[in-house]
Image: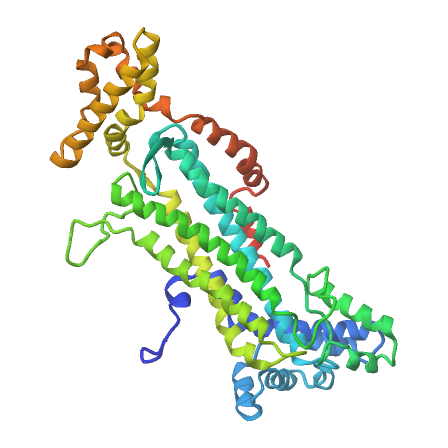
Amino acid sequence: MSDRNSYENPLSLRYASREMNANWSPAKKFSTWRRLWVAIAQAERELGLPITAEQVKGMEALIDNINFESAERWEKKLRHDVMSHIQAFGEQCPAAKPIIHLGATSCEITDNTELIQMRDGLRLLRAKLIEVMRALRTFAERHRDLPTLGFTHFQAAQLTTVGKRACLWLYDLSLDLEKIEREIAGLPFRGIKGTTGTQASFLELFGGDQEKVRRLEQRVAELMGFTACVPVSGQTYTRKIDYGVLTVLSGIAQSAAKMASDLRLLAHLKEIEEPFEAGQVGSSAMAYKRNPMRCERICSLARFVMSLPVNAAQTHANQWFERTLDDSANRRLVLPQAFLAVDILLSTLTDVAGGLQVWPLVIARHIQAELPFMATEAILMAAVKAGGDRQELHEAIRRHSMEAGRRVKEEGRDNDLLKRLAADPLFAAVKAELPELVEPRRFVGRAPEQVVEFLRDCIDPILTANPAGAAAAEAVSV
């Protein structure tokens, strides 16, 4: 049971998924340490060092059977986490104890493990990102031709469609997917480099045989599922790699916050709202409220994630020479929490995108309040074609527009511009055409077609290549 008198990280306990929690758990961390010790021993044996098959098999059998209590007792004595787990592992397989960690330094174990956790975490996030895109694609297609007010500076601008606006969010996410896939493909293994990155200890083990040292590193990387190692390192891999990963996560957070912020504003307008369950409480005092709490949570966590690349930049900048240890405590916080936060961002975003509530009548009312002003150019052109004087018509429209605007702002009444124009003899020739001239779909441009083309050309190939559930199954299997 949890200790109610101790702080508990809400990212783990309140928000993030079981899979992402497991990826950054002690079980995953320390079992990966053991997998690395097995891989190093196996590769060293294959290259001729006096390590027996029985020693490797003995270690392999205990990869997931970790004696945590013993390791914790050793750490109290040794004040060194890697050495403590070496001792605990050796207690369980005494025959292999003499060769565990042979030639290695701590970063052979810790750095490579963190790269594995980041790679596997990125795969989990990739799967979730695709599911957000799938839900948003359905929404965009469904509302591809529903006219809505466009906004610039949060002031009414030309019309767009609800589906076209959703495509703006979807395009951001597709760019994030490109970057996360590039990061997964390019993330390197630190490799087997030794205490200052020179591989001196391994060169000693293999009697100066440089080719065997190169093959050792290649083989361990292969056993751990990597095709490439960093070409050079100090004791640690360059912390610029962490910065690159966190930049990708920040990008996802930016996209999530942009979409969630737009939805919060649309909720204020009562045009589109996030899901709201039948028994959900919006406010402890104001029972009528439907606060956009999911989108607010997204924005809150995104703000945290977006702050982390600066932290990682400082960590890299302050690594002296081959390494200093002032990165360690910082990275124990930053790396797991960044992944956990983005994990819940994407889960929540999928929930929101899959349950958005659209209120077309409210949207139409807002359009009608603004569209008469936007339609004046079309009305002017039609009246000129019907034989009117362009300058005279323009002045009449200006005068009626100013009066209609005054009526809206000073008296709080509806926009009556169309009634004014219909009553003006100058526009008698187009009076019957006015309803058609202010039909909202005339003013959305190519927005519906843009939705169809964007989904067909940019989004559908991604979703076709990643059928529902397939990406998640692949991620969970890592």
